[in-house]
Image 1 (cartoon, rainbow over the protein chains, first blue to last red):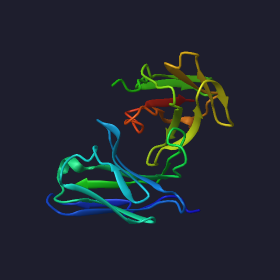
Image 2 (cartoon, chains in turn blue, orange):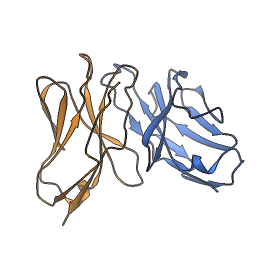
Image 3 (tube, helix red, strand yellow):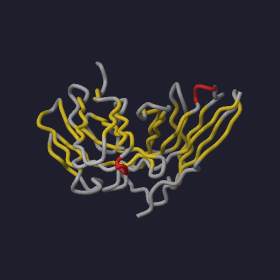
Image 4 (tube, rainbow over the protein chains, first blue to last red):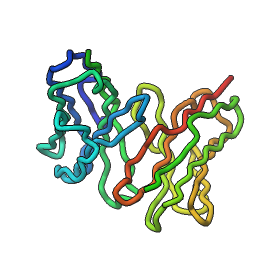
Length: 116
Length: 109
C-alpha cells in the first residue's frame, strides 16, 4: 500500500486566498484525521471522520476552516480566507476503526503551508 | 481534564539506554497508552502500545506501573537515527488524540 497520500506537499499563498489541502487515506481505513502542527502548539487535532461522517470538529480553529470527506478515499481541508497565522504543517492520518482505544493512526507526509 | 505530561527535551549519547516518562494521572480503566515517533519533515509513526506491566517489540519497551498513572518508554542503545520527537498518547474519553508537544530526543555522537 502507498500509505496516506497528501497533496500538495508545499503550498505558498498570499493572505486572503483560498487554500485546499487534499488527502487520500489508506485503502480500507474508515477513520480519517486532520492535524495541524506548529512549534508553539505542537500537533493539534482539527477534525476527524468515521465512515465519511465528521465526528468531532471541535479543534477547527474558526469558520474559515472547513473539511469534507465525500467518499472513503478522499478528504479535503479548506481554509478561506487564509491568514499568516495559518502557516503550519497539516497532517492527514487514517486508521482502521476496530477498537478506538487501540487503533493505530498512520500519518501522511504532511503539507507545509506558508501564508504570506 | 488533565492530559499527558512529558519532558520537553532530552539528550543522550549513542549506545546508551534512554527512558522517557509520561504522566497521565487521569487515565481511565479502558485507556491504552500509545507512543509515536516523529522524525523531522515526516508524520508521526506508531512505535509501541500497552495497557499494563511491560510490552516489548523490536524497537522499544514500554513499562507501566500497577497504578497506570505514568508510563516509561525505553529505547535500548540509541543511535543517531533515534533523534526524533516522541509522543505519549492516552485515550481519555473525548480527548483521545492529544499529541501535545512531545519529548524531543537528541542523540549525541
